[in-house]
Image 1 (tube, protein in one colour):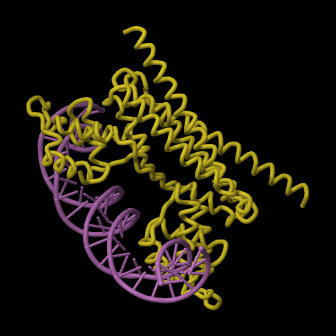
Image 2 (tube, rainbow over the protein chains, first blue to last red):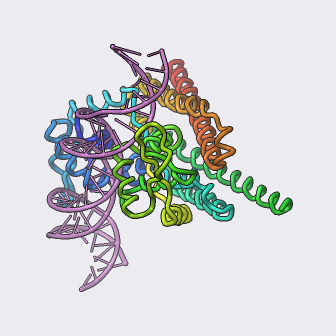
Image 3 (cartoon, chains in turn purple, blue, yellow, red):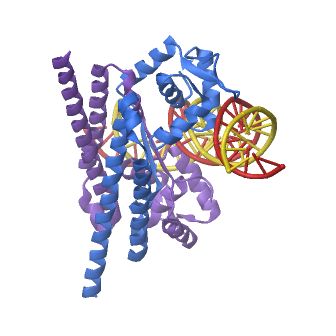
Length: 182
Length: 182
DNA sequence: CTTTACATGTAAAAAGTTACATGATTTT
DNA sequence: AAAATCATGTAACTTTTTACATGTAAAG
């Protein structure tokens, strides 16, 4: 199966019932965006590829008043999904520009480095705020593991916000020490 | 400045003194790989682009016995680095295939889902092990913020390993409860 | 009737990976 | 003498983003 990871995002999204490209995009933006994003430019071509491969099939009938194509998993598609889920490997890529900046922050004067730490904290806090707005109750009933991943996110960004707080306090303390000495 | 984030990885790597493409790649693989990776296919063309833009310049003289080109920051390059560091924004992308699998794990039978959680834990643990092998002492002296980012990584992957342990325990408990009931 | 949300797609550009090519030097 | 490491680069390919094009239906 080609097409990178988008294929699995789609197969996974369809595990709970038929969805259109638009609905898959909504799910991605609401739920998986933080650890796996996908754009329309990936989703629609990939839907076609998966259909051509026989892993998904358009559902005909009730698609509502709007023009819309919903796809469902075929037997082959469900097998492909489960096979992938059972493979205990996985790529892991992180591109965290704020962490990269922090890594190089010796190039800044202390006041600017402190400002950077504050924006790092603000970023983690903003992610946390977004996650807190998600209602876990419906997820817990229909898809327990999506609620588990939400909990992971909540704990993670709570920790990260706290870490940034501690770093900020440490840097401020160092700054006042310097002030006393110098 | 074009060329995506690689440009800043290079400028940042050169903040502490001249380096060759090969040395930059080594630094990336040793230190920033976890939150920002870069391949030779990005580094060498980008070095040329940055040189053409006047942000870096080849250092002549002592390059050792081997053929090798080391670059250093120009004044413009140092300014570009500091300007970037002072910009309080930053892209943030995460592609965590194991987390994506966990999100869809309802599609698995409980035993397979448990196995997935275990491989998730094993991955976090392996990252933690790698981080623990890094000696923070030299970093702390020369580049305090790189030691700070290492501490971030250590705490983060300790937390994540622990989280996975707790989830594993919870799932096992649920499984035995089911066993008693059913 | 106008705006917002729904809905599907494409084309071009940018970014990134991978595999390959080449050769020097150092270590075993 | 062979193997490993140092060192620089390119070409082809894959992946991803971005911007655009197009139109329908619901809501205010």
